[in-house]
Length: 124
Image (cartoon, rainbow, N blue to C red; front, side, top):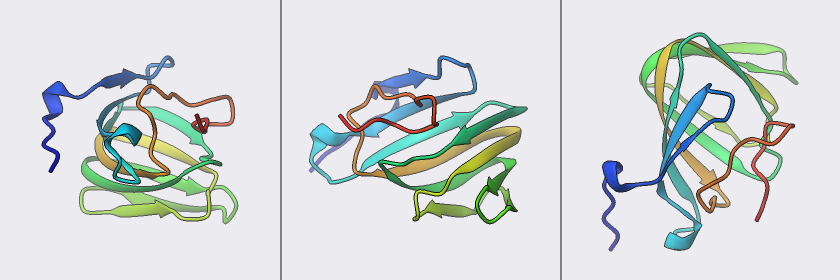
């Protein structure tokens, strides 16, 4: 059994100052996925395209929108909403009110990843 405490987990700060991510479960934990608590800062816009990972995101608090670029559809994000990037969906996340999100990645990240120029995490 693994027991993790949020205040003892590694925290990664986005070099562009748009988000931070507390990485609670990582590749080294051997679960087959990673689990993060991510904060998206108010009034930010982040273009992402996880080409190497699938991601599921549950909104704990805050308010924003997500644009599915391929479908040209925008969805409201608020507490209780989950979205899953099941097709490596290219998207833009807009944050109106600081959001706290629970995120699951498959395959798991090692822990120190930040977005590359395409908005993805590299496989290591």
